[in-house]
Length: 234
Length: 326
Image 1: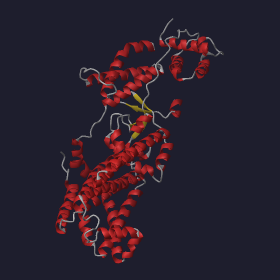
Image 2: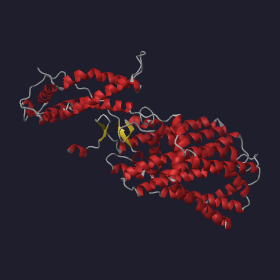
Image 3: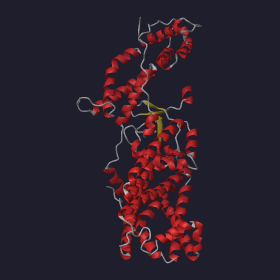
Image 4: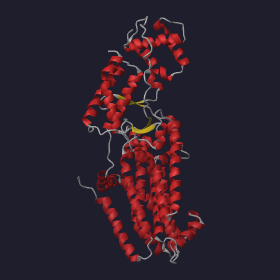
């Protein structure tokens, strides 16, 4: 499959025999998540310091304990929560899962966050950056050892909005893969700009007998063929 | 069957599953009390959705339909195969069985790590005792002065007479500092074990040099009575975390009949159990260090007695606990 070469998606097979598509998150998305988490931790530590000042020695001890917990256990606690993501990761739309797509286990979460130290070496997350850039699944060393993946949370796909397009019977016999391609184009229509949609529809214009032409009306007729392929009849 | 027929026929099932998952994952606020959640219904609907997804993929149904089923099955998969083993029972299993067993299973690494910690300690203790100026090549003069003041017999020495708040401050400090060192000692083992070796030897040299120097200055009594009790937990824990780090490094260098990645995952899974135990030991060590070791009113004899019991307990625990299947 040519698609498998370019795509970074990882397929995890479930016991039911279906393949779950996991989309590993790249270095940029994870960097933003890290920044947000750092900021949140800084704010918590800062707020606790203000409170701690009024509590004397006990307050200082409590603050140091809190720093320790923030440093090492902040990610673990959130990753084991329902969303499987720290607040930073949630904002960016990432989550941590095991290699097989299952929710992250306590041991794995602890391991990957402990090994952040090794990822930091030799300086400024050098090891993590090299590892993430070299691997198509963008794992850092901690992920490698823990057997975890950081993936994009699946987005709810845009609704199919072709109800107002009249079905058009194709002028050519269309095989299953041709039909699928036309329908896939129509399904992507809501996410494309009008011009780009026209461009793409022009490539497929022969199915509605408009070969060589392009424009909004041609696009409408190609989408009509998609309606036809979906099972609508005039 | 066209995609629209397919969707129309099974949409009710998918909606029901979506609704149930929303309730499990608490994505929607429950408005009215509904009937109780039935796990077997979720499982049945999940298996149906898996079939539908396989069909939709095989028939090249439009992307939005496959995406919807993809998302639905992925969510249900997460809910159905969730592991929740973070309870008290799991902690008890680790403490009563898994941790000491993991230590014994990796005895070779533990001995090597112990040697890497103890030998530099002994060598530098002897060197610093015979030529006290050597301490200045290990730590700077201000630190030396601070240590001397800490363990001097004068009443106002730091760490000897302080209020309860001071004890808590030091507790927080010891936890952050010592557990941090142990975690670094473990994690840096990923660099082919070099990081663990460095931290073990470095801490050995530091401890040895200071011990030798303070003994030579005649402050040995206060120093040893201070460190001996919590040392039972702390020194052991540092050695164990180093051992876990060495195991990680070794798994990369000599993966045996696995790929390096598989070997690393396996080693990490086994050695992280040791790190759980190390964390607990260091919390105990910090509590002892902050509230017992520094208590000036306890006679030194009592401290040595308690320390002997602690060392015995730690070794007995690591050597004997959890030998029998339970």
